[in-house]
Amino acid sequence: MPRWIGAVVFFSVAAVIWFSIHLYLYFRVSAAVDLGGTGRTVIKVALVGLALSYLLGRVLAGRCDTAALSLTWVGAVWMGFAALAFTLFILGDLMVALPVAGMERWAGLDTGIATSINRWCGRVALLAAAIGLVWGINVVRSGPNVSSIDVAVKGLAASMNGFRIVQVSDVHIGETIGPEHLGRIVDVVNGLDADLVVITGDVTDEHNGGDGTLLRLLAGMKSRNGVFVSTGNHEVYSGGVGTVSALEATGMKVLRQAHVVVGGSLVVAGVDDPTFLGGRDKLPEAMATSLNGRPVGLPVVLLSHQPLALQAAADLGVGLMLSGHTHGGQIPPFQLLNRIAYRYISGLHRIGDMFLYVSRGAGYWGPPVRLFADPEVVLIRLGPA
Image 1 (spheres, helix red, strand yellow):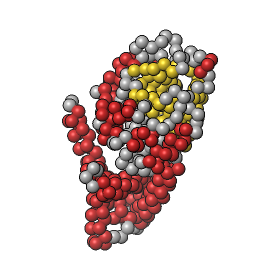
Image 2: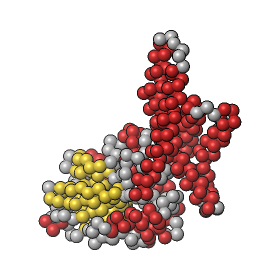
Image 3: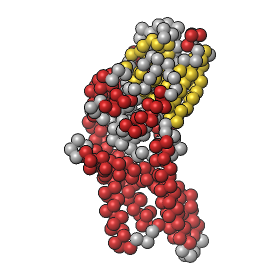
Image 4: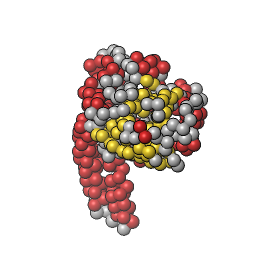
């Protein structure tokens, strides 16, 4: 299937889902609050405006930047609230309102209790969504946190014992992520005394890296052996090869089906995201290509944006695979939805002799909100197996 057809299908499905969510929210809000005719009209207009605000902000970007940024922020915050409210409404309906209505109907009663409970479930859901939104925004503004892990790698030289790798993932520069958030990330990384910094994809959403200002700020992360990057799907969306060139212009090294030897004792390899490669099925071959000609016997750290082709990586002798992409779900209901697409969405896991770490990411995409998936920078200390 040509890429443009896939994009049309994806955005068409997303539009239908987004419309359906807002239709459901309208009926649930109307049931929870006695709005009257005028109030219902106001809610309809507000929901349409809020649903379109993020898209309008992206369309206006580069034409009217002040309006674009304002609309993008409004739309992003609304996406977070809508996701939380939708999740809580669904839970309330399935666990409380519908069972009570079913029992009332089964008993042949018309007491009005089911209607009252339905209304109060809606009110509680709206209040909880608002609290969750404020909490989740505060989590983003307070992060990222440092997650420290120790990983035992076969074949690690004694001189590399305690080697410190700092993993950063899913920064998503641009849109609503600017110097303030990037500064927090850089400060956290630079306080970790890294031997090596790696970024596992989705570095930027600026077209072709923008003017490079924000990329250069991120490239201020310090390590004794430089900063290595593997591409994510958003590098494709933001310009493809042009974005890769912008990354490399900052001094960061992008590993595309390639490897380097660090300290004479550690192979660090990187592969493109499947969106670059042309599909998930191309990932095992890309991994094999990235390791062609590697020194025999040295342990391998593989940077791969999406946590896919795990067994293929393990079979190639990778000791540690570092991924991101999932954001750990970022906010409900995506923790559940991500688990449908990916076996692992966060944390440290073992596949045969290989360790996998899936980062929750240091930034966010869309809503500036994180709930039950705090942003993180990962400090990995290597040791011998």
